[in-house]
Amino acid sequence: MTSFVSLNTHGFTAANYWLGDGVARAPRLHLTSHKTTSLTLVRQKRASSQCCQSPPTLDPVYEKGQVVEDYGGLEAYITGSPESKLAIILISDVFGYETPLLRNLADKVSTSGYFVLVPDFFHGDPATLEIVENENSIDEWLKKHNIPKGFEEANQVIAVLKERGFSAIGAAGFCWGGMVVVELAKYDYINAAVSIHPGPLTHDDIREVKCPISILGAETDTFSPPEVIKQFAEILSSKPEVHSHVKIYPGTEHGWSVSYDVNDKQAVEKAEEVQKDMLDWFVKYVK
Image 1 (cartoon, one colour):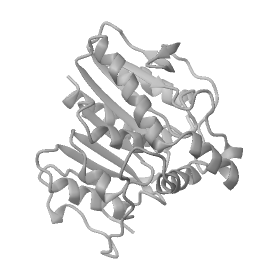
Image 2 (cartoon, rainbow, N blue to C red; image 1 turned 180 degrees about the vertical axis):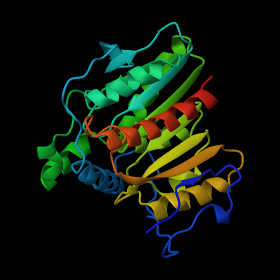
Image 3 (tube, one colour; image 1 turned 90 degrees about the vertical axis):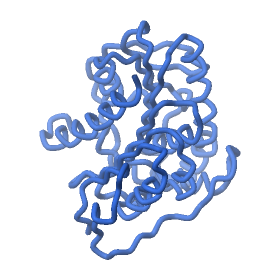
Image 4 (cartoon, rainbow, N blue to C red; image 1 turned 30 degrees about the vertical axis):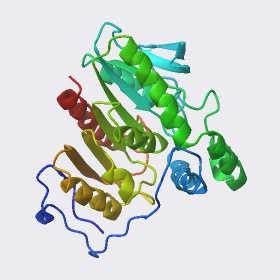
């Protein structure tokens, strides 16, 4: 059991955290290229398996934005003023860009002056509970919708944003999307990154990060547990040139940020807390 709540790795010291068993164990997988490999599929499979424990709310909600058929080659939900010079990309979990609470979050972010996109990285083929719960089905789905492909397509979207005059771009990802965002953070493609209850990441992934990054994790998470998040904080603390922030949210489980019961006051408050922290990071660095 962990007793730490948050870590701010810019000026991080050992006194900032405490773990009950004192043991830190992070996966040592290494992604050496942007080609699909068995390791990336294993990492994604682990990520998708826990997502079925917190599937998205599918009840329709009011949306302020609209869906466009082609933004960097992807269909996308867009919201906010296209006249803004500041853009935020939200990258979904395996359940895809149509998740109402994710679109609702995009609308919230847009009220701070951002043009926000939620691209359909799965091309109309998001995972369903039936797919996630079937080992063969999720294997096949992840072969089609792998992290390297998501990374390349995100770059296409970023290229279009830059062509259209956006001067600063941030990206936030959830679970599957959290892994894509970390890939983006390894390069000079974006100004800030937020990885929320990410799928399995490696030490090398974090070592390669170059832009300001916030990693926001759940207290209960089978593939990004607190002891692993702590290791990421330690790695980031050794990179003073990279501004970073790491936080663990007590009483939360994987997926809580965009998959929650809107009628559960406590669940809503927990989701709003992490959403605010995400937005605060963007306000600080995407300007």
